[in-house]
Image 1: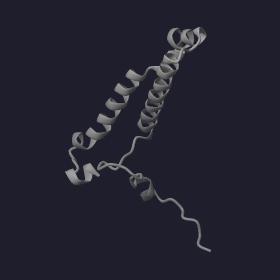
Image 2: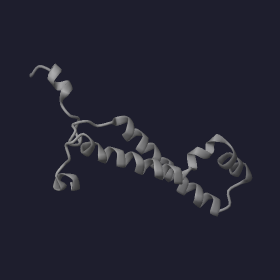
Image 3: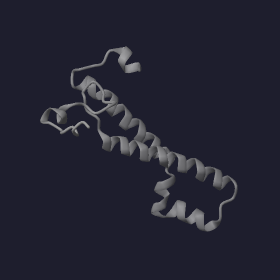
Length: 105
């Protein structure tokens, strides 16, 4: 049975799977983008629910309380695109642009 692989100091420098040309991946930004996408899904469900006639207590909760953030689809779309643009621009800012074929993939 093979021994378990121990991490060396060089392993810590290796890029994460799916990393761009810079060899880095910002998992926190991936999390924010995922949260923004989920809020857009909630926004679409809320629009359908309001078209079907949601009760007055739900109108109050999702329009006049902090829970309105859960259905703020427009703001979440803007956040998603800003974060995506930031991540896509990083290789060019660092002076290591990718070739178009790698970028397109």
